[in-house]
Image 1 (cartoon, helix red, strand yellow):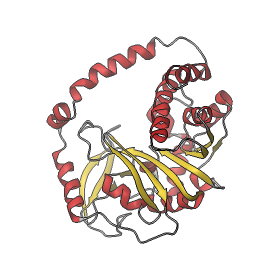
Image 2 (cartoon, rainbow, N blue to C red):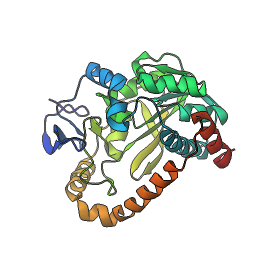
Image 3 (cartoon, rainbow, N blue to C red):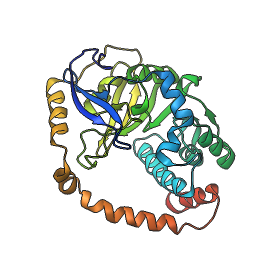
Image 4 (cartoon, helix red, strand yellow):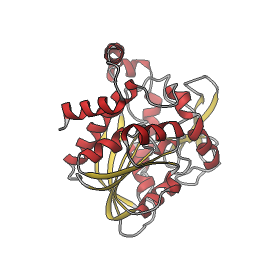
Length: 307
């Protein structure tokens, strides 16, 4: 198998176990460019079938969003909308790829965007259409046509077999100088439990360097937040260019970060000791949610925080 980014075959195995179920799962670090990826990478067909039917059940234990999922997604959506607004992006035709239950798409429509989405899971896309009345199609990115001023992808790119060809597709869907807002987990973070990093659903594990590299033929960097997750706003280039690989220093840094991951770093530098308290607080808040529709809850979140 060759690296999805640099096409070399120069790997170091970093894990052989799925953190979710302890099944065999080989994850490798490319010593040539720093990309971290499953080995072998599943096919587009395998991924498409899995996300259409099994993923939400495996990782959220539900076919359609529950109220607690609406609460989490609604609060996250407002945070992401605020990030866009702070960077001068507050209107235009917007496509949300991997739209989930539709909370972000719905709230974007309330804040000035002409928003729509695409979601592979039937249960979640049906929920979005029926509960919020938003335009979310059931399907994959490959099914999308048209032109957009803004495209968003939150925790989607790490699930797709080939990120470089995905950026090419996104480039073609955006108008000239259109914006792409990507969010993925940060493999270099120190606040992820060392026993909950690698699992089947994530095909790729991006650093800042590898994410920017994968986008480099088609997009220029506008803004980045580099914390637990990587949040990047890209702007479309007028013409495609040659892919720019990470530097040796960046590759060495990712390798070093992978070796440093452990319980001591997570608990102290990553403040893992705070997570139990936060988790208990979240469980209590979600358990006390009054019975209501997802739409009513989402509207209350909007009225309280952003209106």
